[in-house]
Length: 273
Image (cartoon, rainbow, N blue to C red; front, side, top):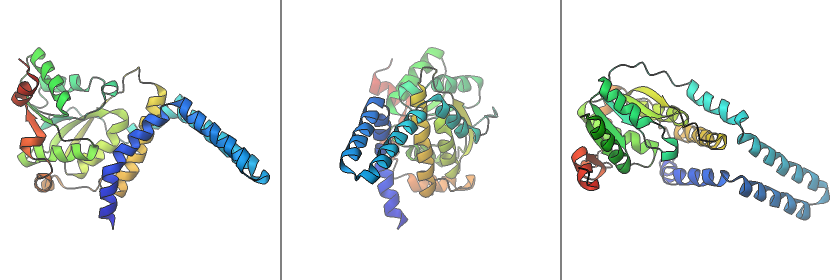
């Protein structure tokens, strides 16, 4: 019974949450919608329920504006990060950088290359095709030479973790530095650990110009994601010894010839000299 649910949620959940995110990002639309509901409630409901319906609508409006304020965004984000251990700075088999919209990505790629330059790892896994091209340009500018691979068949955190298993687990690379932003790290850390990776989380703060409204909605999306991933069993822990088995299980979903690009392939595709 859980399998059909997992399939449906796995397909629709990311689209739904981002649609809700962008809708709630527009206070004018949300406030107008709640005002319309309040007016309809006044006109359509019976007199004895009218005041109650209007009060509910006004309470929802107040709650919405509270959720967009620093009074919510700051503690909500801090709570997410409080469960994540600090990066111990140890050497790793690979550095894995998760994708994010450019507005939210901060200096995650610069931090990854700093780690390569410092000798923490010579293996670099970048999520995303265009992100891989940007990182390769930075690699050339800094005269670095990591073994870089870009995963190009990923849209969700689950797919990022599984593609990492396919790319790294099959080669026996288990200990990773995982780089993503503050709100996303808890869910990402638990997901990668659940597949058998030994994870050192390295949190990249959101850029300073990201508004409290955006921070609040990113945090809410992560809380919903934690619940859905927990229900779907995506945090179930695997031993590092089982990571090669996980890699085999997901290999058909992430074929090397379609879902991974080497530095040379990125150069050819983007005509980088």
